[in-house]
Image (cartoon, rainbow, N blue to C red; front, side, top):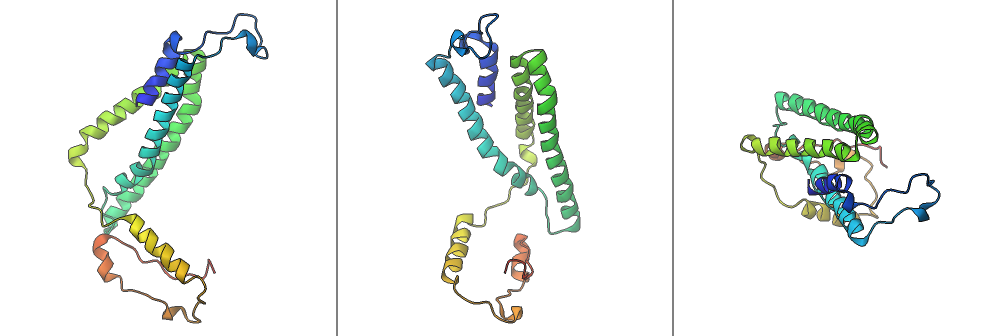
Length: 195
């Protein structure tokens, strides 16, 4: 949110950006235009850095957090999760469409500050709704570290890399599904696709 606010300020406050090129100068003669100061660049780069950090934190966790709100071990839960997935990705692509059309139009026709202000206001509204919904969320307790499981799989794959596959797939390790049902895990069927 701060990074987006910094971008709005960069577009709205003239002292946070270099002066405009003199009238009549072509884009090829950049030497006639004022260059940004160190402080202006620092402010702009800090906006970009904050946006990158925020995007890196929210994008990988927003979808799984939403998915945790549904009990996927029931038919109704699976349907609700599928509907959530559809609406989630519809919202993502709708926002991309609006950013590439409406926001760009506002930036070119009205002002850059207003063009950056629209997504900033939308982000602020989404944060308010997220916080207001906090008492209603369903929280899943973690079942250990995913890094531990990843390390186990990588270690097993490394030690078994030279083993040959058995002739019969039925001789492969095939645990029963019942012990895993309470944690919502699914059992993947054996396939020859990646051999």
